[in-house]
Image (cartoon, rainbow, N blue to C red; front, side, top):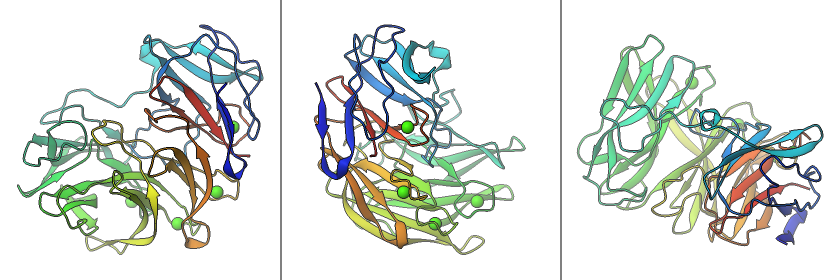
Length: 362
Ligand SMILES: [Ca+2]
Ligand SMILES: [Ca+2]
Ligand SMILES: [Ca+2]
Ligand SMILES: [Ca+2]
């Protein structure tokens, strides 16, 4: 029985699926430990019940999650009639990043979608000019493309000393004007990664803001989440700098107007990792209001990847407010959902050994 009481009163309960359409014996209530009957021991992956179309988690809490068993069968987990149930789901109903072929795309690329002035954004011009391969292959992108609401395709190209070291160009409204900005990782071959924000002006993609490069080649960062973390009404962007070597969680705000803006780092805190070196999985962090104080919190693995950490930015300062031990190696994306319909989020992860865990606040 994989069951642990851990620090700060948070709960881990092991979700062993029932048969093909079996029903969990009890809802997994927040703050209670539940063990669930099983015939489905080996879980290969877990996905959110709604696709993360924008490419960055901003507090969405779907009421379902989808698991894929080691044998390949996909099942949705949801609350039905007061009980959580597991039902097989056909492939065509599984939310996926758009993978249809576009010109000049990077291998395994993901297209971010937003029903706004920018409809789609993705990375282009695969090249081998950077020998880092942190994302699991030897290719990085040299360009960034969008499709506008009018159907016009635009592209921004980097010079040969830089790459986009990411799998997607995320679409998120950072300045509150109702239209998305484009966020991705822009890397100098000599000086490492930075966070870059782009927008469309006229028929051009322009860069609105960029953090300084980390300062050393082969130093990377991974975008984590975007939301109003401090409750001032403005959206912040969070990322983990150097997630493989003692990651620093940074939260910044896009300030200024027009094309001369800055990404001002408001606070930072060390001890996190939202990526495994060489992995294709970039979505190892989520944000929602964990502790019920009305502010979204950031939930992500600790630096040693043996814990899940919950970070609040209440009062403008980043602070760990909860911590949960993980008995294994996180293999999946972090998925947020409200499976039991109590209005509070649960975090789902699958481990390398095939176990699926759900975490909920007390
Ligand atoms: Ca905007
Ligand atoms: Ca804010
Ligand atoms: Ca909170
Ligand atoms: Ca819940």
